[in-house]
Length: 292
Image 1 (cartoon, helix red, strand yellow):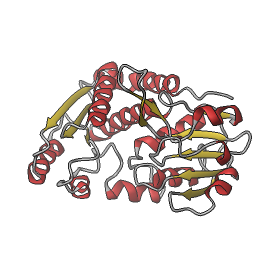
Image 2: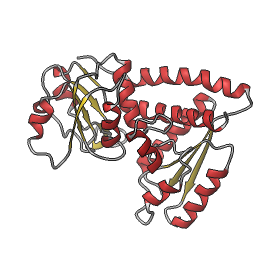
Image 3: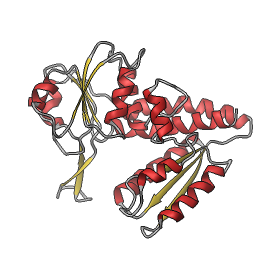
Image 4: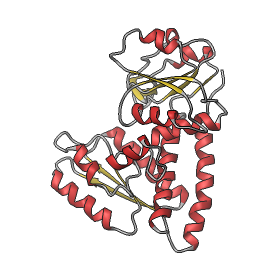
């Protein structure tokens, strides 16, 4: 079993970003990211802190905007309009999920697509589908692809099964892996919670990307010997021995499958750090384009 170290690979990505940021600063420009959090969801607060810390490590400008859960949709739209027009902000992220009274699609569509560093605006989704590299790719799929290429795992001609069909991971992940060139040229199957004969489908895969959002949804019976596993899931389960009262686990039962795998990502420390690194990458890319 070969552990795919997301922390190490993310640090390498950040090191390259530092060089690009230094060039921008020579021109008097600092990449700026605005992260908007509506409500007090603990998991979302943790994600926002991690993004803020990454900006500080890289010397980027970070604006963290925390709003009460009672914030109206119109108030949020007005804020986004101001951020769209702010020349110091090159990337905008509205932390998902928002409170139930907020129309998340309407918020996404209100973003300037040139500042949509999450890659969820319809224009960026279309550009990904059309292999137009001028758009932004969602951070988690981009991070997963980078983990594979950085670890020397061949995707060309590989049979890859993605378990999960969300717009955040499953669908863009499939489009990335279907692209021609490095990190692509794969034969891709998307499975999900309604898929029949899931065990047979995942056992046929050279690479399994798990993004169901259910703890330990995939076990040893789902994998063939020598498969590669990218586990996107980050789930909290009770753990009385932990000071927090919980521990983080993936969508794959790591202890049950690791010995069968040619390579596998841990949870935490696998995909998570790469998602943050790719967000920083997208923000620097947005800054370079907006100031060129």
